[in-house]
Image (tube, rainbow, N blue to C red; front, side, top):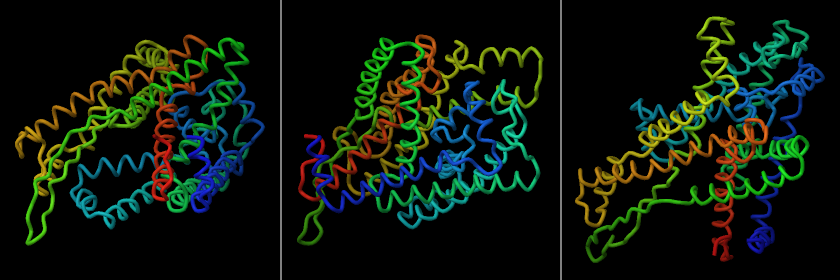
Length: 431
């Protein structure tokens, strides 16, 4: 693998793409530490040292590489784009116009991408307005810290902050598209990888300072095992064999080839974890906005705010399993796959075309989704276990959303480089 990386850097075109990607990643991290005009940088650092923020703010802060709670120019990070992409993807199932665009090929995909950009800007305006509205009141963004984060709360200053944060989201979109066009791999995924990986050293170093060298080494060893297990599952797939009948057109024959339909064990990716985390934060958000002291509000504060209560863990576990099945059902359509196979003369050996093929695909999909959903749920609660065992924060690097995204993006990027190496008749990473 090291030799393959060496050959990648020896290839001028590929080396240029790799260095271009690295430079964009560095620029992205630089923008994540530049404070938004009107923010008291000193007070923000004071509050960050005093409190730990979890919930949805903690999730968005993870995706922004810590830029959210720094209230930087790139405070919103890639989260508005992720949300808009998920919404557009879900709407393709509901809105016939979007479904037709998806089937049009490259032109339809370009229009859906444009809709995603417009929706991203709209969500960025809403999220930046909400973030500034929360941050302007001392103690709201950082519970327990009463320092003034925004000293000047005039409308002109607030509007400037919203515009700057929204513009920062637009720049992030542009940087991601630059990586996709001129760099290596999917640009948005690499920016997410950059944001999450940036928090790893700080999290690991805090464990060493608080728990000592022995616990640090144990955490590193466990982390290696977790990464190996995640790589194994992410690479696992069920291959359904497909045979295409041979057709004679004039003097030429077509078809007769054998291929397969790959169904991954983790077909849903990290989306169910994001959905479950976001929905479970809604009750605590309602309590914070209402400032209620009723019995139901106290119960929510005790069970759903810290994230380490058994009620929260059970609800989190169950919702991840539910959303895994839900997301797989809307992204993989057995009827559409069976119809496409029938059009091109394909069939599954031993299974009749038509309804039996659909039922077989549904059966395989439900069977493969069961272990995939349990895998996602178990990996997602690793930070909760780490919180109980070593006192780490819920952004514990070797678990949850962080490890799923880092490993997934790393594997995809390695495959991109490998494919480009193979195009130039070099050996790839895998032998």
